Length: 504
Image 1 (tube, one colour):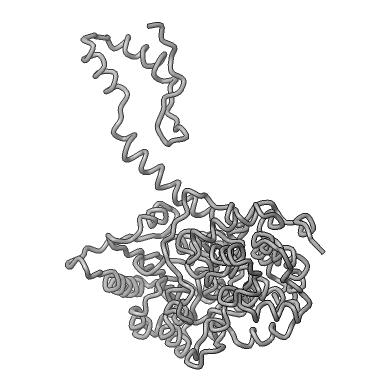
Image 2 (image 1 turned 180 degrees about the vertical axis):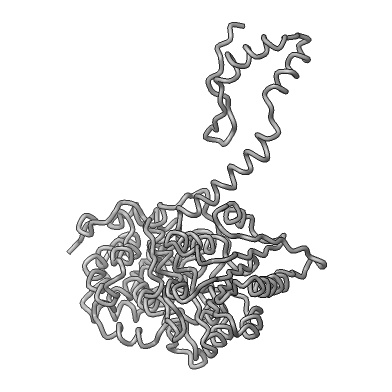
């Protein structure tokens, strides 16, 4: 039976087409033989890989990445238990083998096309390009894929049509909280039941094949530094939601919570009287920090913060300006100066300022009983260890917290919190606000501050060898100059609007 796209009730927009073509870039090359476990993953103590293991199985990622067939691969990227579980299910096997077959057909399209047309072979007679085991497994599961006098283009359409009734039956392998439609969309491209639709999607795969997860062919268009989107659940799910114009907030569902990890900082604030916040601008993401500060402010918790120490370095992001502009925060900003260009002094400066604040507050009879360190740098551990009179909460980022630091905090009963909870990469509203602030500052301070209309009028009079008295100049300005305004054209150029009509 042939199924049409209308039966799937999918959007006619592919995940890839949601992106701005002009902004796509290949900033990172992930090959088919990506090492089973990257350093970033090893250093991420709370990452789960259950969902990515299930997605990897279904889209046809090779067995070796599940630890099969390579005895030396003792730490595979994906869970072997998930592979064994899903491989017992007929529907999951069908989807996996169809996806593996589609990847092989697209990856080896030119060579297979030549064999089929020049040597008059069918795909089951080209074992070096189309693995026979895939076809045999499909046959055993009731999918007689090989047909006589079939074009290669038609075979690719057949994969799409066979997938239609079987992919929905794999929803049972995903948790109920995940939006299944977003997973399902990975398997189907718009107009996938036509040769033209598959040709269009194949262009992206052919050009950016190394950026697809383990080079597996799916409905995806790699963007910027996505990298290995199947690294772990904490990376994959937020990106998946973002590509579907949605946001994912509950990171507790995709991470392993340690014994001392807290899901919300509010309880820490409830147990504190006066809190000192220390922010290491070198080892914290400004957008995420701004996100958590905004969240604390919205909950009315900022009042318990006696001071926010923001210690910066000349080489960090200018995004920190957005936090410094908030006049309602008890913020003290300090920019460190480097003695050696390659050596930062942020950690030393922040430690000194922290201790000074503790001592000063105690002398004033307003002791600091709690402190929050916003940094993923383990260099601040001595500060925590040597200040036992203060309760600490450490705010970290998933990808930048080392296993050793995580273990040290846990072993010493120091609570920690992941600021990623309140700012994921899809938080477009906060991104927009930060970028807009910087653009306005650049325009006002960099361009408009240098422009004075009266100076322009005077230069025009001098150039034309004309004169105006003060009254004439005032009338001229009010009647002709004041109504004009500056606007920006589509190409970004500044243009004058409401210009007076000229006769000559």
